[in-house]
Length: 384
Image 1 (tube, rainbow, N blue to C red):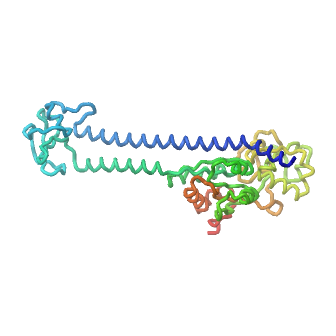
Image 2 (cartoon, rainbow, N blue to C red; image 1 turned 180 degrees about the vertical axis):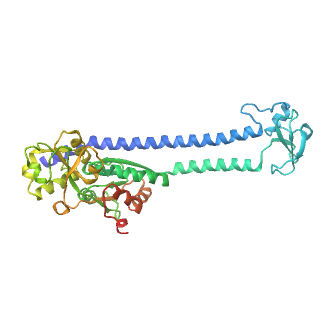
């Protein structure tokens, strides 16, 4: 009974995080819709400007259907509503506008160019064939952009907090080339897994450890055949610039009163750090000093602020901070294997677009970005 109550309490405690994730996704959707309307407004504005330029060339004016100096009948004929004799034009000559059987001349006042079409007997604003082609191209381009905007997909990615900077950079380039929108929800892998279990809408899950992906796969929440181990990482001990730590054993010193770690229940970096300290037989001596944090980025922030004496984070997180120093890099032999699996979720709202983004994350271009931020590439692209 107590175990069941504990599970219920844990689920209830995770609901606010789930709701925050859902609101973030909804906010991203609203932003995407707003951006689509802005693009549409810009396209229509561009088309309007092109037609405005055409009106300037032809002498037409918005809200002024009659040409200056022309009769009302000639003005109406300009818009295809009447017939006038070609004698109303002055300075007539063969028109090169491309219309069959037309003469070019000026209106009676000699101020605006007009064309007279013999087969219809109508006066038309003089426009070149090239200008009419440009109008058609502009209208077609606007239609194509509109269709592309309506068919752009929004891919929601739940990713470990340590991937924040690298994924944002990769997504920026991908959005420009694909037209799709990538929405991220960054948090501790355990928190993200609970949100997915609770039904939060997402397309892709990228965890900082295999255990969270294993749990979702056992519950049938991952799409079969899409899971792969993408990246690896390294643990480091970070301190403020004036702290004196040269090895993990120094964490047991009396001068180190507070040690920030990711919450071992939900943060893979904390789980890895505890396993490392246990392997070095240091955990009993430092356990009372541990300050649990909600994510690995929270650990980094705690060290940067000086609220703790030291912390254990990924090498990639330490690399982005100018306020901490790396006191010690944990050798691979002393730490568990760090692996970042990713997978398509079984109930992904945009499975096709998500698969394309997953393929991009395994490309040479994305791998280069991951390496730039200090990650170890484990995917097929790394073997090329």
